[in-house]
Amino acid sequence: MGLLRLGFLANFLSHPVISGFITASGIQIAASQLAPVLGIHAEGENFVDLVKSMWPNLRHINPYTAAIGFGSLAFLFWVRRSLKALLRHFGLGERPADILAKVGPVVAIAATTIAVWGFGLTEHGVRIVGTVPKGLPKLALPPFEPVLWTKLLVPALLISIVGYVESISVALTLAAKRRQRVDPDQELIALGASNIGAAISGGFPVTGGFARSVVNFEAGAETPAAGAFTAVGIALATLFLTPLLFFLPNATLAATIIVAVASLIDFGALKRTYRYSKADFVAMAATILLTLYEGVEAGLVAGVGLSIFLHLYRTSKPHVAVVGQMPGTMNFRNVVRHTVVTDPEILSLRVDASLYFPNARFIEDYINQAVAANPTVRHVILECLQ
Picture 1 (cartoon, helix red, strand yellow):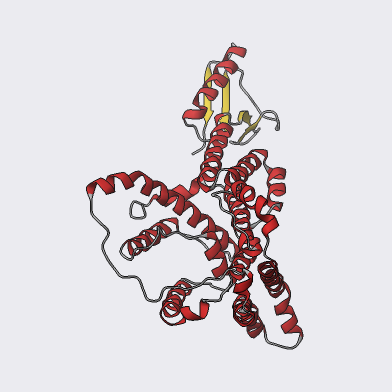
Picture 2 (cartoon, rainbow, N blue to C red):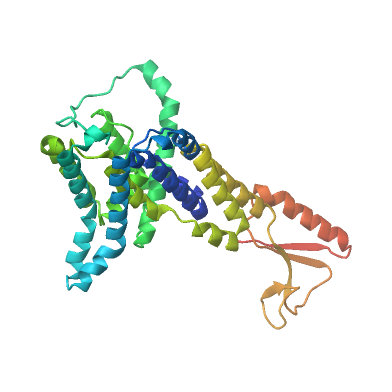
């Protein structure tokens, strides 16, 4: 897709659709992490299923897990909002204060891991990461069976499209925060190369996930080098540090993700979108609701489909103005708004839109009605956009 320069598919993602999709994804990711924070079980592919699964289990909340989870949440939110300002108040420099504020999640992980180990909280039902396998994955080619490849062709295409849309959505959002530009074609090539790497190392399909990307962004990553350093760090941790993660509570990991994705949720965008465009508000609201109710794929399809439909509907009935000549000039303006010179035998029309098949019939009917209403017309002039 990248080599064929199909990155233009990102153009079908309007800003309201992206904003709605990201808001809904943030809500869904945060909701999926509430169960680990509370120490209960919940499962589901969308927000509604998660809530239904979680509700009956609320009476089984583990107080120790909840204390760790909510304590981590409170600490991480405080670190994000207040720690840097506090350090600056005590005279610390801008850069050191920023670095220490970014280390907040590491401190939470270390402190809660030591607490679980030291107080034996696993005996009180606190769920931990447990044994993490050591070593790097072995490289091997995937099976080249024609029957298997035929079965996987359509699902692989759908996974590629959904993965690309999710990746480009979070990329555009994070790039906008720093006034940077995203090259959709290059994004496709990067995803393709990453998936080839995953294929020969036994990995899952690769995409730019919301939760991981935002955690990386919030940690201060600014260039692609952050990904390389992260890969090196993960490799070293996999080889040497996995025993230290044995007592890491799941609640702390969940709290870290919730704090990271909280910045994605923007309900104010609904109000702003409603003010300037009711149609875009409908597309945004539909994206949010369907993503929460049916899942990511349904939300994206609905949002993109509605955006395209609303665009076609708006451009199917373009503004057409009858124009005349401004006295003493070669300029032509709308007869309704300006004092112009006209000829009863000439009907001069300006079509304020590109002429294409959805609006061709509307313009044809408009011309026919205008000519029928004025029998003196002998010539019709169309001024079209270039």
